[in-house]
Image 1 (tube, rainbow, N blue to C red):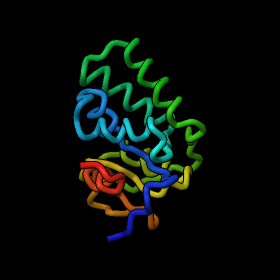
Image 2 (image 1 turned 30 degrees about the vertical axis):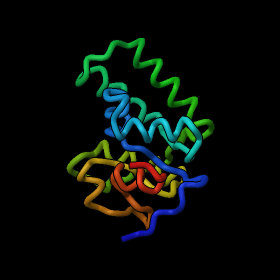
Image 3 (image 1 turned 135 degrees about the horizontal axis):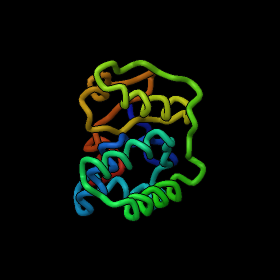
Image 4 (image 1 turned 120 degrees about the horizontal axis):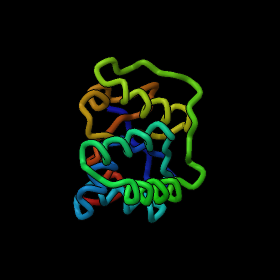
Length: 146
């Protein structure tokens, strides 16, 4: 197992499923990661592709209207503060779920310390180019949360 760096100034990419769970269930465990990002406990990296996917899922799968989606996007961009990553390389690591490749691309381009996901396609990889891919429960533990 790859060691996870300490949370201080840790650069992390959250998978879309973490955002969706956080915004759908604001008292849930994934919402705690979003609160920690807002509090500056780690440096959040995000890409336009991740934001587009999140907006699409909130709209189509969860029935959100455009105004609340735009509000969430503005909050993410504000929290990422300079951590908006524009990947220049296309990665084809996850054939079963190509959207997961956008997560890896953001992490590689942004030189992330780790990827946080609850998606088995990514978690089964365990790491990409030496970068750990961890479940949200493990990242919460790294941050000292339950």
